[in-house]
Image 1 (cartoon, rainbow over the protein chains, first blue to last red):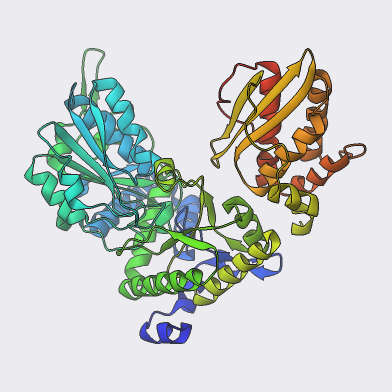
Image 2 (cartoon, rainbow over the protein chains, first blue to last red):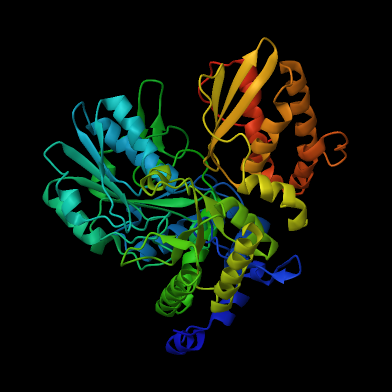
Length: 415
Length: 150
């Protein structure tokens, strides 16, 4: 497939999208930035930057506290952002959307407030082999605290998780199944709906790590049926330090607060404290107000663009990158699942990923190199590290051509 | 920043054909260095006669900078005393982190001076040296918990 053949089928206006993201106009070493590290963190559009700027300049105050004008404005904007997130993932109510620092904090919240309080010795927590450390370590902590056991569902040589292999590990002791919607290291898209349905049929609580999914796929938590869904703002074109935990209201109601402080209480005496209602019960202390407003703006920005077109463009980029990189001698793509989000992990014989990353950087091409916080995935493929190019809808076919040329240049340096 | 300055011929050569690479048994000291940020992992093994390093070999996997640095290090410290090796570590550490550092009398190790223009790569070059220091100071340590990123 050529650039033109691919581009013709897709009506998405990439150049218009690029103009929304000021950093994409940057030159590095006199060359235009090719930002192919969106899986680590995506860039922000003016729409987000301006929303945060407007709040910081004109409306900042603490929320849920003051009777004065600024406090009311800040509260209104913060809560409007929550409403935007409710719509974005199709939660049933705003009580199900909790603002957290990011995916990591969301998972830790569920681990400590839900799992730690209901699991006991001999219970099992099921995860998969392709999880990010953020969806492994919080469960290991819970296992240490409760005597529960961590069980890991295998992947195959393509980096796919098979439903049957997961089912074989579910039993009457399995209390929780936590898994990625999209693998950050390999790009594999997991069959979330099917896995959730199977878990549900067995009374197993489900948590989906959606950090890599929300930028690439439409996510409807009611349709997926999961109990918890976690994601970060900064991979979704929003600010860092803000993310969302979606939780099923009936479960959240039963969970104790995991941090105590201001805002999460209704009344405090030294004898007894009455906790606030959802979602505030889980938002102790002054939150990241501007971050939430920025994330609200990010999902409203996405509402305003041709999202199906953007996703189709990303898939065309994935197909083009896969085909182009495969033509390079000594290059091997790691993670070849049938259903993938738009990222490609790869290794080049004779060129260590870190050297590749440095050489690409000289050509103003930003990729991620390393273990991608998924060391068990690297161990599975017997690799210390990979190079990972991860795309957003603002990336172009030309950038992939530049990526391939730079990989060839690296090969010639180490030949 | 110039790539040619980072990937000098000496570096490329020692990456392609690392010297003193492989097991060393029995060893008087064996320490594994691990950089959790990037996954680079290497083991440095020493044979000592009193204060003198009579043999040194390394094994592991890492990038070109890390492999070449370890290879150059083994050549440079073989035959040196513990004190001389530690002094050389200080010189190399200085070379990797200080723009004003001189590479006089460092011989082939001077090839590492290009690394300081690439701050993200300094830890690649210094991993083996920190591992060596650990082996010289506490030969029974199995794994370095973390390596400083300077």
